[in-house]
Amino acid sequence: MTESVAERIAAALERAREMPPQLRDVVEKLLIDVAGLCVAARNTDYTRSALAGWEGNGSCTAIGHARTLDAAGAAFVNGTSAHGEDFDDTFEGGPVHAGAVIVPAILAIAERNSIEGSDALRGIAVGVEVMCRASLVAPKLIHKAGFHPTAVLGAMGAAAGVAAALHLSRNEFVHALGIAGSMASGIIEYLAEGAWTKRMHPGWAAQSGIRAADLARAGFVGPRTVFEGTHGLYYGFARTAGGDWAKLLDGFGSQWLAASIAFKPYACGTMTQPYVDCARRLAKKIDVENIKEIICEAAEGTVHRLWEPLAAKQRPPNAYAAKFSQPYCIAAGFVLGHAGLDAFTEERVRDERLRGLAAKVRYEIDPHNPYPDEFTGHVRAKLRDGSVVEERQPHLRGGRSEPLSRADIEEKFRLNCAYGGWSAAQAERFLAFARQAFDSRIDLSPFRS
Image 1 (spheres, rainbow, N blue to C red):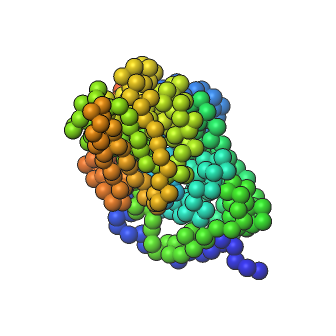
Image 2 (image 1 turned 120 degrees about the horizontal axis):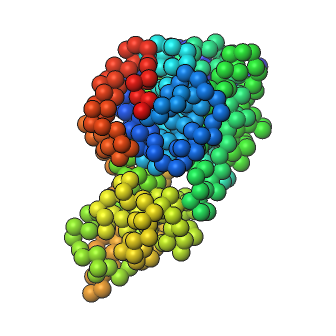
Image 3 (image 1 turned 30 degrees about the vertical axis):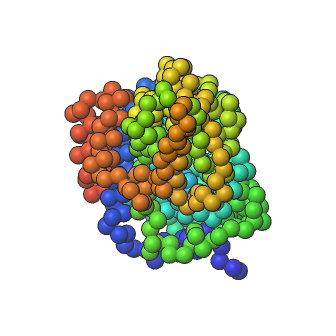
């Protein structure tokens, strides 16, 4: 019998005993970033709804909330909150948002099962690695088919991470992945009107991974060929029975792509970030009032999510829809000088200065754009006097070419905590916890308010 992709992953993980030291630093950054985002979103309507809509109580922590939940519920609420403002980490080449899926899943089972911190560390690293590598197998095709890669591949990554953290056997690990394949979901129709469903995708994937691993540990059987089968994951969600399996398998357990996770400087769609940087630089050179038209070169693979329908993107109906509007985010970079959390409020999205400038923004497809291997930015402004100024950016700031430092991540965390109503002392207590979280058993109970 030919060894399946899931079996090859399981075998590779059994051989992988040591993780590079820099991987712990990345995992700690993920923990800090995710926790700060959970706090930032803790008073939002969608987080309140996620918390109120979950029935099961238990011993696990929804960060920033007094109520405790079962493991699946804590993973769901934390994952939803962490991704809710689209300010969470991303993986270049995917793109997928791994931290908002994997960290909540592992924190939940760490509390439920009282596992060692070292096992939690390994679980997060493994889950992120599976999710990121899986995103490279059939790039762009999951999005093109109408699904959200973070949601679909997140269920697989969470199942792998939980299985690794709980020391499931090789067969149980394979079954967990097989079961998770039937729990994967997540359509991108939220783009139509800025609905909330994208926000819950990481949370749903996180709890799915926990349930899949629990079922596998209890003896439930899933398909070995969940990835590559005739009716497997990629056939269902990417409309292909093929894929570059080497991207998933080669070097697994010895070359950790998770170490190159990117952290966002802005609270909006990943591919928009370099455009905001370009707009901010141009705003220092020209008077925004003198802009007649803005033309941006764009990758074809981003147009259906961030540029079209153009008239709707130029005038997004609500603050959440604005996060996936290239014209609005570029206008925010010019007018506000940032695209942080304060740029995406219902009041801001109705600001006529922003709407007026966004209406001047359009795009041209660049057939040579390297997306998804690189996320680039380009903004060209035509001024009323006929002159033209432009800025380009060849990479994502915060990504592998220009990473954010640990100090940057911690400062982002502090600002997010302040936004969500935590005191400076509460924020510093969590940062102290994060520095040693993986040296002992994880206890999140001090962070339930």
